[in-house]
Length: 293
Image (cartoon, rainbow, N blue to C red; front, side):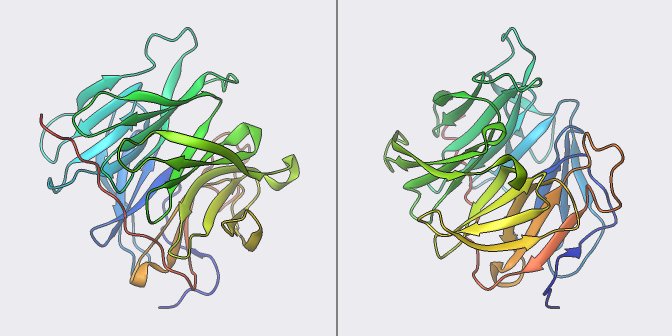
């Protein structure tokens, strides 16, 4: 089936649909505040199936290389392993001792096996968020500080360019990534949005190097060229697009998770999972490498 217009992909409505990933022929996503890890098919609409339910917020997961069914997760106040069998195992607690209550947010693995995870305060205190980098076999370290609500990051095909959103500020910055160490350099403004456009949330980079951005509060997703020029906008029947990925047949199906959180009243499609086909495919989902246990 070809989707020329945004299509409702499930009857489920999520509080905060984030962290979309295409993994092993299925769509993986989270209902962030509810701590739910979910999956569904990519060929035709179907109900969401719950894989795990945590008692803490679940920002996003990445598959673990060589360990089918295991996930590395930005969960609660740190990074955890969700094994295929057994309970969650905390690997690092990153924000538990802050004066302001805080939690983890979006996260993703890069092509070198590193896991990147953002943190934020529940109150969205400016400057109190951060992006952490966890290399295989090493402890997480702060990679970018002074953020408010980090979203992404998203990497190009080579893994040497990173895009990172600070949502309340309406900003997306671009960084150069050292492929050997993961060190960041050359921070440059990539995208600056005005309040009426919505704010940048989840992102992904396609095979042509263009950046897809979900516009929270803007009822749209946009595709930007590598020089930051707007290439395409797709209007959506939901107010708060939060996360997106390219998957499905040929990796040309754009899936968008939306949120009904804080909407009073929420519209009938707020919180829906949506899908639409696009011409340029996405990139394969990278797996996180744990190193030695």
